[in-house]
Image (tube, rainbow, N blue to C red; front, side, top):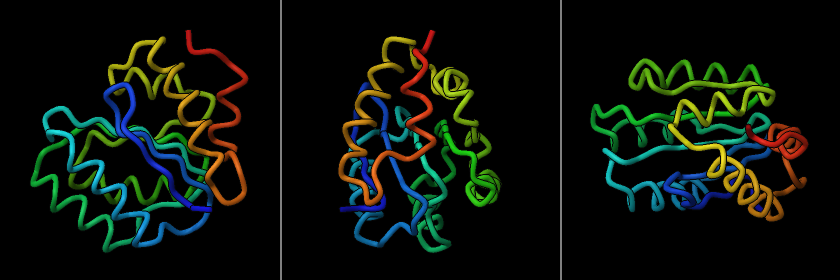
Length: 148
């Protein structure tokens, strides 16, 4: 079981995380997926209950982006996650945190259609079966409402 699971789906790097710390191994898997996408086409969507990259991991992402600012949407109710996103926003102002009730705004931030958004939620639910603790609340609340 994992704390962070990721995939590329619908042209988006999709991440699902529980409330636990991202391990270095999990981070390396995420960075391998990110490196497969041209930075100019990179979009990241993360659902998390509080798990987030540590300082070293954030630095690695910022260094890799090299000043580019791809859109990143994080769906979470966690104050810790909001703080981490604020730190990343100093280097990438296009990272935004959305409450689980505002997932459609996260999709809009990434220029994702409603159909693709629904597909991403389904893919995220599938990925979440590999998480320690099961489906994060940030994601579970989104399966109850269709993206319109």
